[in-house]
Image (cartoon, rainbow, N blue to C red; front, side):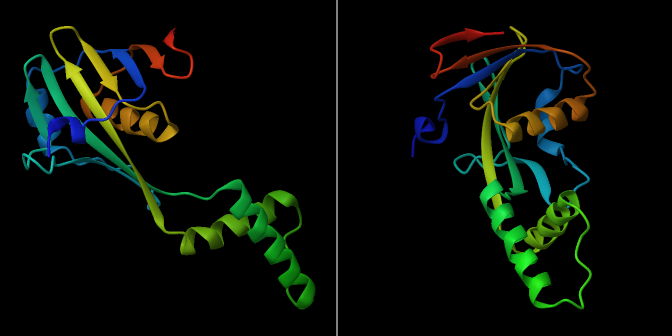
Length: 172
C-alpha cells in the first residue's frame, strides 16, 4: 500500500488558519473529541500504515478525521411517516401526533434506533509555515469535523477558499 492509496483528494477546501500552539502534533495525537450527541461521533484515526494519528510530512502535518453518524434520508423519513400513519389508522385506540412536525419527530426517533451508523473520512493537511489547512471534502460532516477541531484548539476565526472539480476553479 502506498500513501497515494490512502490520500484521495478529488476536491478540496482550503483554510487560512493558525493554531495557537507550537505543539500541534501532540495535541492532535492526544485529542478526544466529545460532540455531546450519541448519534454523531468525531475522532482522529490512526493511519493503518504508520500506526500514528498524525504524520509529519516535509511541509506540514497530515491526519484523518472520521465522522460517524446516523443517516436518515428524506425518502426513509417519508416512508416511515407513511408507515406510522397507517399504523395509527389501523389502531384507533392510539393517540396520533397532532401535526406534521410531530409526525416527523416520531418517525426520526424510531428510525434513529434502527438505522445503522455511517461514516465519512476526511483527510486533512496542515502547513504551519504557510498557515494553510486543506481538506479533501466540503460536506456537512467535514464542516462538523473542522468545527470540533477548532474547538479543540480554541480558535475563533479563519478564512476559506474552496477548490472543486464541479466548478473547475477557486471560490471564496
